[in-house]
Image 1 (tube, rainbow, N blue to C red):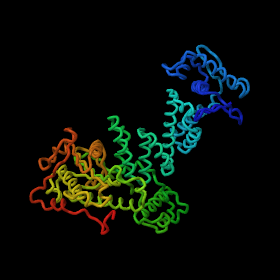
Image 2: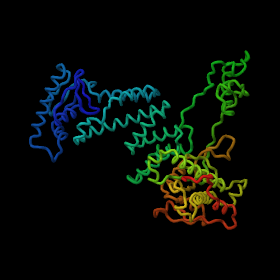
Image 3: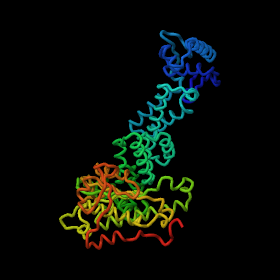
Length: 543
């Protein structure tokens, strides 16, 4: 006799489903199965069947009748001793083989899958965890849950399934199946929007699918919900993942296969090594030859092998990136689609999507141009979010933009104001903007402090990425920025000096809303940056 709890409660004997009685009889059986082979006190059974203020006088009699009926069902459904309901002080217990209950089979397979995942065998873990999840036919004891049953034990079972589902996603991602698991992840996050682990897995899957902007949108949506509803920030792991996506951290991607690492015909890549040359060294030289030719010229691995590119000596190895903590100012600029501006059915239209893509691309180009004009460096652009770094003038004196624009914080604020005024020129009413332009809102944030900056080896003047608490602070300010607002942290405000006017944001002295950035007298470059039009194609967008 088998008991199926992962869905509506069912009792199966052979190929036949055994009919059960009314709600109280089914609830009694379900509660006893949750503690199989354990004595459940009568008082707990009564509390499970009725609320404290709704227990009838005849409750014990009703329970005894339910137990009597269940004994008859179990006796008819299988051989003696296969499953039995016995009275044992201070209550009752169901005695049966735990593997006859699908809930226990689920737990056993989950244990196997988690052991395989921890042991570095994600493919086997996918199979085990997938088999465990396949046992579910709906919510646990769904028929009882529909009648209002809310047992803590039942809630624990439901939460266990969500935990296992996240383990399954982790195993699939470890196997490189981010495309295959994307739909399941989106459905899981939609159903449980406050679970940070599955949200992080969705962000990682989207990033690996080349949808970095959507990955950051998942983070922003979750953070807004946590802050507004619970007054909480996302956990450390999720914040670290968000910073890694902004910085295009290589650790987020799967290691690509090395197509020429084990060539089938070594002589096609390089001459056969001399007798006194170790074979290991020759293999190493051939491998580097193929990889180098592929990266430089964009050839396929086969063409790179056939072209016999210049052989890279064995001693030529990639040097690690240089990491330094530096004082700088960080600027984040984001274009967002106004909530509810584009209904889902319109967003799916190709012409509407193309218009929106063009508008976002123009915002990105305008942002890059103005960041570079004021002496900044764009080190990351993920969809509608651009990241600019501004460093104070170094020993060589810097460029004209640095001398005219002032310190790093002031130049970052000038760049932010120039982008805002280029995208939404002052005095231009919404009715004079195209439909797509009206759907976009611009948000910016500036933070000043020390951050961990990564440089390419041998090129300390070209930052590749930035990470650390400063970037997290700037991202939080960006999330708080209202449409058209530029928010600055206290350190940026102090560093920028009197050439910027502010108002406290939400009455807080920890971050400030930029009201106006004054042009430095006689600064033609700054004036040109503010007055430069927002570049548009010949066709008006949205027309």
